[in-house]
Amino acid sequence: MFLTLNEGVGMCMRKRMLAGVAASALLAMDPSVVYAQSQPAPVAEPATAPAPVAATLPDRAPSKAVRGRWTISGGAGIFLDRAKSASGIISSLHGASGDVAASYTPALSAWSFGIHAQFGHSRTKRAEHSSTETATKSRAHACSTTTPTTPTGLGSPPASPGLRPAIACNTHGTQNIKRREKQARNSSHFILDFEVGKDLGLGTTPWDEPKLKAVAGVRYARLTDNLEIDNTTATTTAWTSTAGGPSVTAQASRTTRNMRRTFSGVGPRIGLTASLPIIKPVTLDGSVGVAVLFGQAKSWSTQNFYSGSSIASLSLDGTSHSSEDHGRGIVSLSFNVGPTFHLSQNVAISASYKYEAFYNALPANFDSTTQASKNVIIQGPEVRLKLSF
Image (cartoon, rainbow, N blue to C red; front, side):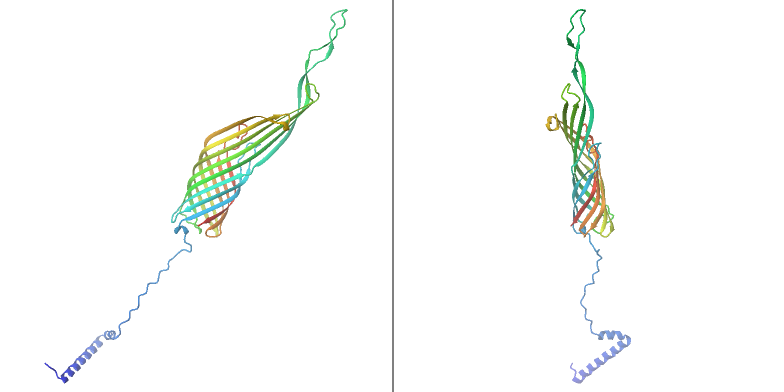
């Protein structure tokens, strides 16, 4: 079957006419279909990443959230040892004190671990007291008189003079007594605390310090009290006559005592520390603690005795020693409070007043004749520098 040229052209024309009629019909029913088909296909735009959501971060991220935090501090101050002593013994000693501390807070932890050492030594306080006393003294000696004896009878020759039996006589004199007492006293202390702290969850200051922290640990303390006493007595007596001895007599004596009292003990300690922001960059910091220490209270005493006719000619007559040693438990109370000035996020300086008391710590006596207070109370101002990293 073969079509002629005219037949082929006619068939092609008919097909095109039918397509045009069909398109017209579709346009009449839904013009958008034809319009959509006539439009070129949209070019797909490249995909873009969604805009990141801005993270809400604090202005200052706590350092301990990233890594552990070390804090090192040191301070110096003056202290007053207010332990009272018996009448006539030096008290209220002044001295210099210092302390160093270090603590570590692990990352993302409310716990901390620290060590704190305090030490101090008072200056040697000296005192001297002199007195003069006058008294009337007497000394006995034998005295006699010459008298005639009684005649033996009438016509007897006169008796020759004889001696009456000796009788006791007294010679009086004026005695001057000069006394001088010298004292020298000093004290020292060493306190060492090992502690574990726990943030109580009341928040932190802008400098990463817990507002309230509980601490517990172990305290060691060594307390020393030294006393030296030098007593000298010189006595001179001027007699009204030489009967019974020289017209002037003199004697001297001296006693020196070197005494020491100590306490060394260790025991558990608990406490609280607080840091309260006041105005930037100042916080009010403080701590309080109580400990029970168990240890040894000791005392030593050495006495030297001298005698002679004068102070310049004294010679040693003898030496005595005494000591006491008692086990005991004592209570220790401590607190300090003061403002802290934060110079930067990691540097601060503070001024505080501290109080350390050890009750019933020392023996009551230096020796059998010298009593003193058993309590040791140390208090005074202090300045500290603190570094964190």
